[in-house]
Image (cartoon, rainbow, N blue to C red; front, side, top):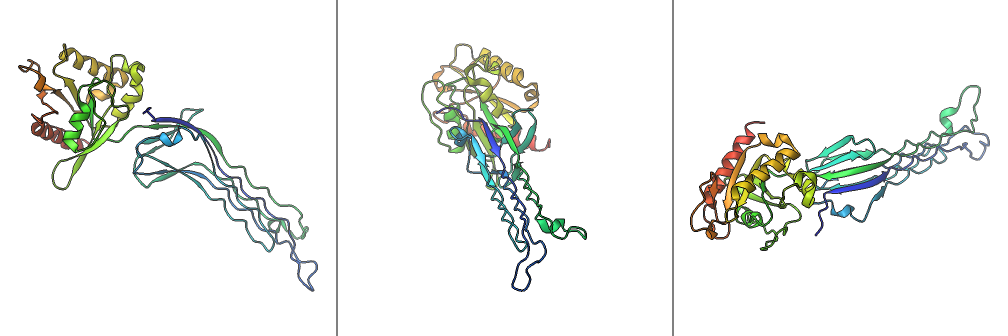
Length: 322
């Protein structure tokens, strides 16, 4: 499955309806005054944070969104109906940029919140607004305003408290499944994970923290190799980084060094996050390597209780730094 955490779309708000030119007419009142109503406001394009969405996949095949126009005004000062808004659901963690200027317009995090990305045009005024003492029968009315049109870039940075970072096939997905009861795709070949997987780990009876199994990184990831920059952006929001190293690798110590270098090259600010090094697959070793870190086997569960306690401690500590 391809990664879908970037999208470019065009949005157009509705035009306002035109004001009406009309004059009051009734039996015995052949020459009534102006009574043309106002046009309705055009619909706006609105983004809504939908908690059940986790990717921008819906934008792969649809790139244009348009709100409806407002209706024209009518006689007897009746205003036209406003055009319905075009509401676009997006997952939590979506950033919206103006594609032309690069300006960040919104960072959508809280489920249920919304933001107007393109504003509908105001309706035009009907002719009754233009009556004066010297012109009691105005035959003019305003046209409705044109709705805004924008080209937007959407970027998803997944919201997770803890990020599992490692080379492909380090066992991150298996580790996530054991820590959180999530069900990511697991196989014994690299790049099984092409989208971050999320799971919730219990801290106690009343609270949890969210753990993300991030797709495997390779050397040069910060330059885009192996879709690295698409993977790395999801790390930026995490509070705690857990480096998962294959303990059976030829040079596990070097793998850790490369991973840390990739993260710091991508964003030096990541260096300030609480970090934990975990050596997985110890069931494949005859003896533990002489390097610092926690040793676990996600496959048979060795060391997972200690790992959970360590992650919980780092997470709680990070909350105090708000």
